Length: 241
Image (tube, rainbow, N blue to C red):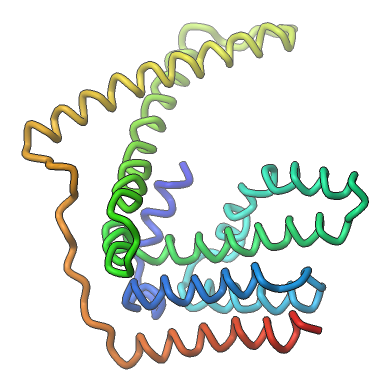
C-alpha cells in the first residue's frame, strides 16, 4: 500500500522533515511553476530538475528508487495524452508532457513524504487554499486505508475459497476481477458511511481539529531561498536555452 509507506516516510527525521510545512509548499509551487513554464524539456533541463529532486530526496533520507518508482504512477495517464500529441505530429510536446508530469509528481511526492498529512493540510489552509479542498484531501487520504483494508480482506477470502484454476480463460478472470471491484466499492462505501456516522456522533462539525504550525525560523527561510534559487536557476539558465 503506497499511502501506508508514504505515511511512514512522513514521520521520519531529516533536514527536510524538520522544515516548516509552509516553506516546503512554497518551494514546491516554485518548482512546479518552473517546470510548467519551461518551453519544452531538453535533456539538460530535465537532468537539472531531476538533480534538484535527487538532492532533496538525499537530504530527506528517503529511498531514492522508492520515491522515483512511486512517482511513475502518473506515467500511464500522461502517456495516453502524449500518444495523442505524437500521432498529431508533435513528438516534442509529447516528450515534454511525459517529462513534466513525472518531475511534477516526484516533487509533490517528496513534499508529501516529508510532511505529515495534518501539517500538510493545515499549511494549505494557512496559505489560502479553500478549506473544502483541504478537507477533501484529508478525507481522501484517510479513506484510502479503508479501501486497502477491504481489498486485503477480499483477497485473502478469495484465495481461501477459490484457488487459481489452471487454464482459466482471460474472460473468466476479467469477469471475476470486475465483480471483485464492484463488491470492494460497495463494502468500502458501507464502511465509510459507518465511519462518518461515528465521526458525527463524536462531535465532528465538518472540520478536523486545527494543527498549530510553528513560526518559520531562519533555517526554514534559507531552505526556501535555496530550493527556489535552484529551481529558477534551471528554468532561467537551462530551460530557456
